[in-house]
Amino acid sequence: MSVVYVLAHFDDEYCALPLLLARHRQGRRQRLLFVADYPSERVGRARFEETRALLRWLGLADDAAVHVGAGSGVRDGTVHRGLPDAWRALRDALDGEAPEEIVTPAWEGGHADHDMCALLAVALQQSLPGRPLVRQFGLYNGAGLPGPVFRACTPLRQNGPAAVVPMTSADWAQYAAAVRFYPSQAHVWSTLWPAMFARFAGHGFRWQALEPRRVRERPHPGPLLYERTGRASYGEVRACADAFLRDLR
Image (cartoon, rainbow, N blue to C red; front, side, top):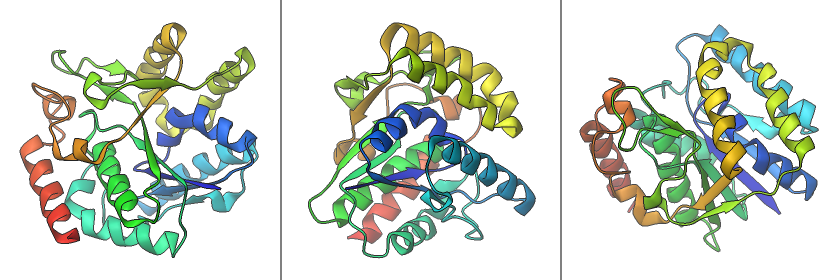
């Protein structure tokens, strides 16, 4: 049985680490497909190597991670503008493979690239035999909060009930230590990592099933975090998503 992760950026997998650990222990084949390209080839290579170093530490082979977005022009921060190219790259990477499970960042309005991975994961589900379950994991969202303030790894009520991945104290220690594999992103993890673990201390690591209808809805009422931080407008992201979905029919 295989699991496919549809991810935007190198380091997104860190937020799904409890699922990676659980599936590895089950002996399941795991493939991590990264759709965002980087403006600098040097930066892209360095960040890809950070991800590979983490996966080696977990016991996964180098070929478990595939940078499907390399050279595609589907740039970090603007995946919504390159959805058709990202889709083709994903389909080419799978090449007839039929995973039993798809894992993706949540449809939560935190980062437009993460939301587009959720959209692509649903499209992938609809194209595969057996319609595999899509599991979504939260990274961060700003539902009901002002300015750049966010909640880390907090499931949105709109995404339905959440399930907990059981983890031992050793698992949590392993998760905490794994952040060291991302030195290039230290500035990001310096704020996100403490918030993540404060959340996990009280609620554990949780995932939600991603229903196809959700990617046609606004993630939550009010301004989205990526709008409030000036990264993108929901109107533009929605228009790109809708055009992509229409062309799939």
